[in-house]
Length: 233
Image (tube, rainbow, N blue to C red):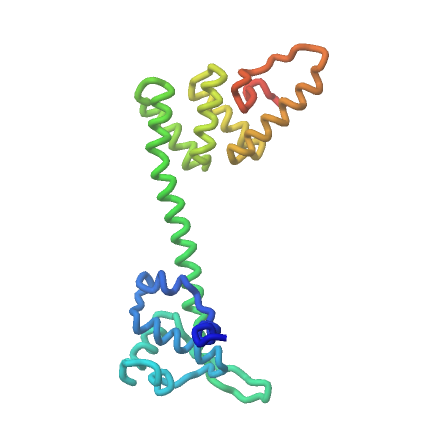
């Protein structure tokens, strides 16, 4: 085994999100390095390294190290707890759970923000698509209706677009028809375009089986959906 391989073999597991989010948590590079060293000491069996031990691998002073530790404790990222060993010896230990929990929360918050940002970005395209299909600017009432689908009904923009497409293919381009489609889909638990496509295909298969000897009224064959207004089930 080469020296490089030996070097890379000695790895330490560490949350990547800390390196990406420490600035948002109000931490500096020095703070992160102290956290890294605490984590390393603990992985080696030393749960409560002293500032002097930490400074063996740092360029800051003991006073600065103490200030970093106080800062981490004040922010709730680091705590000192008493732990009992297998020999009933009580020892103190650093606990970084507060930092890990904050990282998890910040990641969840970022997901929510990204999701809302994506939603906001899609809305102008959604309004523009409706205006293109209707061949005119939308009225304030129609804009409010779309906003209600998005905010109150929590419909996905892609599903609203699918309902618009269905109304176009069925030759019934009006908001009342589109609203009925979305309500029927929601009642049937359909929350994605794929769900709508599968439900439509299932419906057509059932209709074909039940009406082999007659000519059923078949919607526009180019549509991947069926006429939801005619389904009272």
